[in-house]
Length: 183
Image (cartoon, rainbow, N blue to C red; front, side, top):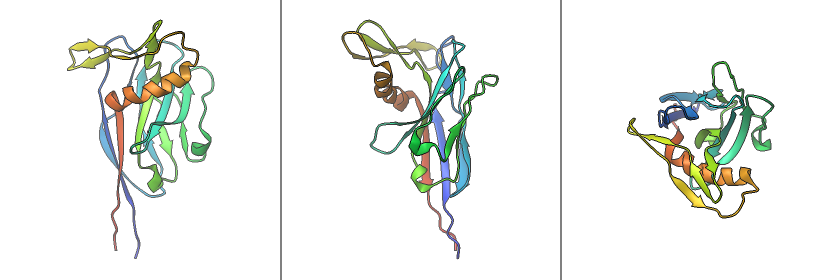
């Protein structure tokens, strides 16, 4: 008797943002894999800058997103220690992609995975403003996130905090695990 674990990946994302704006796109679809497999989550991007900063996040149920890794067009990104052994990505500026590969798939990899392009929020003197988003393919809007007052000195920490709001609403990859036992 052999027990197999079937892991189903379900992707669901907003297709794009307003013309001329930075954006990430993650293809819709479904993928099935067995525990121990290698899986790749696709992410393509369009950036108005020559030095794009791309990030991958993992979010467990009822938790804030956890930073996995970063990749840059110019320079070297970083990977958090807990993910270094099995998670990796390579930014390809020619094809504008930064796929996330997970080796030796575990049940604990069940989570929501986000691909993000920095900056996802911009700073004015006292307010963080979310980048423009496309609504119903016709209307562009931007949403004020929260007044922060004063000069922001730790942009990275603030970006991480507000990034979860942006990503939870507009860019999500749902990774669900279904266990099937075959006799």
